[in-house]
Length: 309
Image (cartoon, rainbow, N blue to C red; front, top):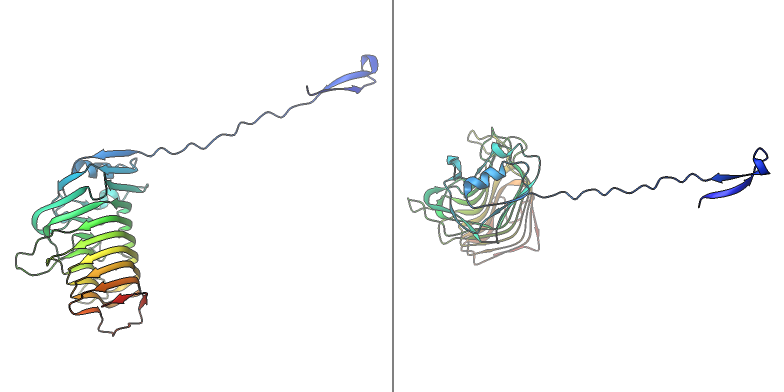
């Protein structure tokens, strides 16, 4: 089909046949779609084993109630998310089988630390879990950092989580916090997202969101507090001081699209840079919607469509 007759004096009869050379047909190669590895677990031990496996992309925790020991005890059934998971090179999703279908139960512990992100743990998303049944530790039910000598946790996302049904401390006072953002080695815990948070308190929690501890806080403290934190779609009810921002090395904190109900003080600010409250509403505050020793409009805080009362 690709031949033509041409004049050719050197050929018999004065003509020859020229055949065109066809370029080989190149069959495009498709890039294979990566296969995501998902495992389903039904125990805390299995959850942590899968989390340490760098080949796993998604962990589905079967619906149910799971007893957990306080995170700091670092026992087989505690959620201390530390150095064992820092060497992962792939992001991972840990999710409840259905949103709200998995409860982490503290068993009435007098010092309930539900989960701690420490020692360089990174690129994890936890979705759809509830923490309950324990007296919250002063350092929090959910904790980021807390140790200046440890690498900071980073790129940690929590989605659609709940903290409720907590116990009062043995002395009858509110000491503990729902979520505690603390110190770590430079630059501090960073690139944290909480999207969809429910905190229901009936008199046990001092603050729902507490930012505290860094090397500038005095009293021999050290380490760096959080950088680049976003909290959105939070709904907090009943806590004493719902949001406490109190560390000089905080940088770039956004709280948006959130509601606070029935707090003594909805938001308290003392230290931190680049603080933005956007579309945050508080109602029924027993004392104040917003308080700071620096006045009602500290220069480090930006209010956008926010109504705190």
